[in-house]
Amino acid sequence: MSDELIAALAQALQTRGEWLATAESCTGGMIAAQITDRAGSSAWFERGLVTYSNLAKTELLGVEPVLLAEHGAVSQACAEAMARGLLRACPVDWGVAVTGIAGPGGGTPDKPVGTVWIAWIQRGQRPQAHRFGFEGDRASVRAQAAQAALEGLLYRIGEAG
Image (cartoon, rainbow, N blue to C red; front, side, top):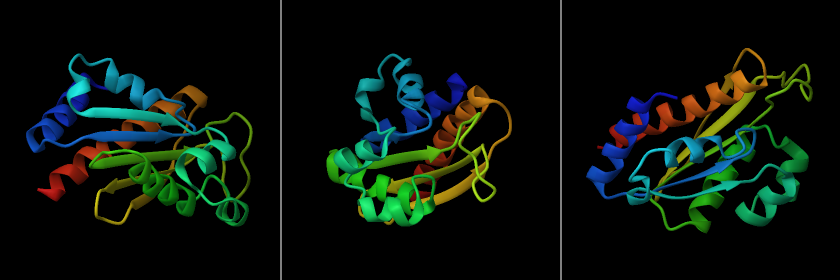
């Protein structure tokens, strides 16, 4: 994760007077940690939730158990539900939710290791989700997911004007 990316995100959110929260599964708090490595992040980063288990997704974000049963935790439906739940749970303007399979096990033919869904949401808007297929070992998949989550967020903040 580049310091320049975090600096640009900080600038964009502070200029707008807006706040961010994260909901992380496969990245396990990595995004929040990288954000809070930057001094002054308390001016724009409100909180990060690590919702690694399905129970955590249900209890902390309100993801319906039936959604998890029908679509699985690594799905567009789950990522979007995590993002919506994050904004219900947190007094923020922006949220990013990440769920995926970092490996080395857990993959299937439909959802191989490296499959990651990221959903971004702005308060008052619908979530936007994207499926990624990252390559590499567990650490690499997680790092790529964190990078993509923040790059996508910065892009969407810019698009929001």
